[in-house]
Length: 291
Image (cartoon, rainbow, N blue to C red):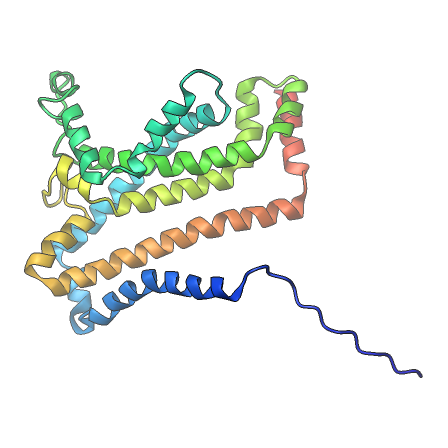
């Protein structure tokens, strides 16, 4: 039996220089160290009483309810908008995209002022809403509108990218088989971009959950009505710093869970798509022909 030479072990090439890792660690520390500092300042002996007080529970519940409502609004309004931006062909499309993405770079307080001068009593639509018996500003509705204003671009950006990168070939097949545009969109396009839609919706929820400036300016800080958890943290910072730190940790924990979910869903969907091949899309195209 002849001995065989051991083949040299080949390591996968990552293409990342070591100094990049050094800078990446520094970047991670910029984000992680402040969060660690919050954990280190928590009064663990009184943590449960601090986060289960009446005002804290009310603020957390309001934040979750309004964030869920604004996320639904983002999906209902953002999906058609993303489709138009990704597939539309008309003048000033670039200008429309810039305006839609403007809340990403605007200070939230500016968004709050803009909403106030739109839906407030003296605002652009204030007279119309009052004539209908609707009080928008400084109400729970104002919280939802403020959150939608700042969170909508996150869903639009995520979904527009997904619409641009996939689905054209399968949509063309479904249309060739006789499917109507509505059927193609419902049975082919939406299933293909579902990971992007889910990611955008989760990120919109996270952004809504952390909204502060626009909410304070447009909705105020009324306990049980407009005082969300970020506003409660801000107020507690002046009167009870330990409560502010404890509530900040709660908000961080919820945000981490939401962001982790946002990045886990697309990966899982991609693995399922790779294992199943093209059969779901082909079936959707065939269904489009029947429909």
